Length: 375
Image (cartoon, rainbow, N blue to C red):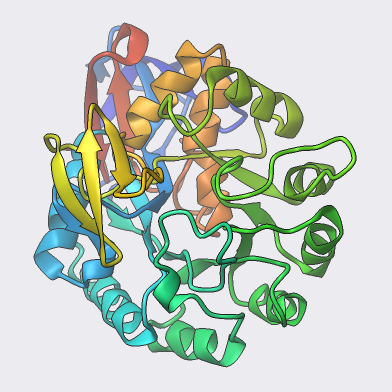
């Protein structure tokens, strides 16, 4: 199938007018190359890569940590419909046996390759190696100090599906854990009360990611800079950002892009099972969450995650003043890099999977294609 007259977000993160081919095996070819005159005319519509969410817990009633096949499928179908064609679902701070079940369900889902479902490209292990002080909505009953043997057992048990593991660097054994885990996946700093020195050591040891910037970590202070400046100073570190209008003020979204640049911000949803559903009570990691007016909180008022999908978060970033190109890159290529999947997804390039979104002006309407087939 050939397409022409498209405003294509290209591999060099600019827009070019041209066409492309989708091969029979669902890959891009002839991007900006020679296209037949009878190709499908997209009439100048914007074409961007399918979005990649590397931090999402659930949607439409399903939660990855449930280890439920039907719930994971429901979640993946919803994501695909809204333009998120790949994802790395995040688990919660839970017992190892619960995590093992969830990861096994992820392995089974990948093997099925269900049509119309977003691609599960890895798992984000968010917990249990966190600070009690900055646990946020994580369940304190299951927090642990870094445990590489336990992590490695989970990692091997799911065939290496874990692509991000999160850790508070001030915990005993954190530095050694990072040195070992970095050989297997991306290590992210998260849910931490760390000072600058511990964070700097963690990044020097090989951590290359910062989970939901600003949230569940100390703020920046000019005499006690903390985690954020330590991350910003290391050019190898990417920072996640939840752009739902609640987790970070628009001015702080702009500040994040200014500090880290468009190449190092990873937009994420951090969406919960309530995403896509009406106000009410839901469950998260063994705790009750109340969704009201688009805000999800625990009983004590703690913000418990988001109810916004990544496509809407990307649009929010643009509305807050982030350039179109930086916002799209932060929702596509950068997260693909964070999970080591950039050779397959995240950009419109010859040979990559033809997952793309055709967008009308203002991104108000869209058509989603997975492997070249419209959803």
